[in-house]
Amino acid sequence: MSTTASNDTVRIPLPELHDLACRVLRRQGLSQAHAEAMARTIVAGQRDDCQSHGVYRLITCAHTIRAGKVDLQAEPVLAPASGAVVRVDARYAFSPLAFERGLPALVEAARTHGLGALVIQHCFHFSALWPEIEAITAHGLAALALTPSHAWVAPAGGHQPVFGTNPIAFGWPRPGPTPFVFDFATSAIARGDLELHRRAGKPLPPGCGVDAQGQPSTDPVAIAQGAMLAFGGHKGSALSAMVELMAGALIGDWMSRESLAFDAGDGAAPCHGELILAFDPARLSGGDPAAHQQRAEEMFAAITGQGARLPSQRRYEARARSLAEGVAVPRALYAEIQALAG
Ligand code: NDP
Ligand code: PYC
Image (tube, protein in one colour):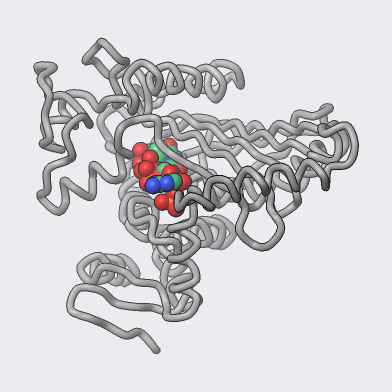
């Protein structure tokens, strides 16, 4: 055990944290394959200092399991190949294993057709999207991922929830290990961050939500009873609607309102589908992809050259720290997780 500690944080070597996450998930009854795939996603979140989608998710996944609707053992089913579309039925299990099982066929579809679409259906979804995006950019492909969640977010101009927090994530492959990636909720704040504020008894920044009477509030409890707001007013609201349509209606799976209705007050993770697109620059650029890649690099240099940062830079720096020094976990959270591991 090489865990080190400061007053409010413990630092744990990456393999040790992965083992702990697997133990917790196995103890909740998940199959080895699901536990491993989920632990990879959850530990990657903590490693990159994404507190809302790191090991805190072990607690929310355990709660989701207790609600009794997740299939803890179901093997994802990959449909027979059909052009550029790869379908994986998660069969009401958690999503990471379904993604891992669909990834090779998605890469193959993108290489064959220039564009591949991975449709995951019937999954409980709890994770950040950038681990999936990075798994695709590692193959030299660009990627876009969309997923609904639970209806927590009011449309611009309204005050009743219709949309999920509906993340959009994009990745562009670059030379070296760090692709250009962004990944954000289309709500002003992710639900996970709202929950962390609620747990810490802290107010949210202004503009994140309204209370049950439709009045602006910074109280996470009042906003949970009212509605969260989209980022950027009508623009975030329209993007969120797009996610509902593309990763819900288009792929024949639930939108956020249906996911919340299925939850029926359990407070479990959302249940719906996910749409993940992969694009092959070698096929789509019409020739000389290296030259076009170079033009992309010039654009990145124009951003960083003036002191602005690229999205994911903070994450990559946190990753480097975690790999060198171990992963930082808030002490109180670590104790909760150890209790879950028994
Ligand atoms: P953030 O607002 O923390 O970050 C959004 C993106 O912007 C990141 O890529 C971030 O990079 C980048 N960024 C932040 N600040 C800057 C800056 N100053 N300059 C350039 N880029 C910047 O994300 P959210 O809180 O909205 O979402 C957090 C996570 O929650 C996401 O990973 C998302 O997938 C997940 N989520 C999942 C949902 C689900 O249904 N499964 C629902 C909603 C959210 P960096 O990380 O380096 O700071
Ligand atoms: O943080 O909004 C969120 C979220 C929803 C589902 C998983 N994370």
